[in-house]
Length: 166
Image (cartoon, rainbow, N blue to C red; front, top):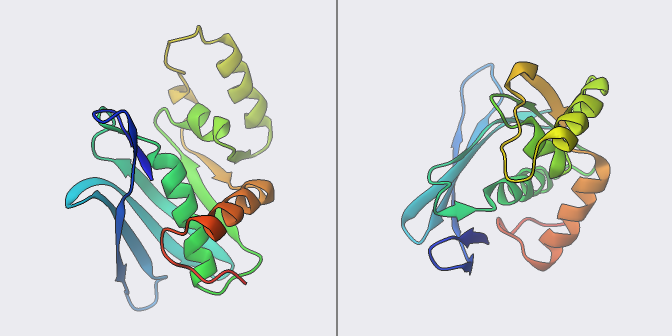
């Protein structure tokens, strides 16, 4: 479910899956998230032997919908479960100005020293202002085990992809 700013409530979403196979490269799976037939956002994942690499998360209309990041995180975990993985890694890059948001939602950075820099930015940003993390550039991040476990519990109650949980 995602939050519709127009309706001031959470709404169910439809998710369409498309797999792109290229010889000698990992499969890329694109999940299109829709409000009925209206495109809301997209998540693109590349399979790794022991998990997934998040190519991108895109909210097509952030003025109308919020909560897409959490939906994308759940899709990432469900995708790994759907592949039959039990112990897996979810890796991605924070770029542009997304570092603080991903940190606040539970992702962590490699190298770990970046985590404190992001915390300092969050603490020093006045309430109501956007976090400015652009200067940090493109930094690798991962989903910690605790966050994966949180999404597994959520998936057991409300699966988006209907993944089997082992």
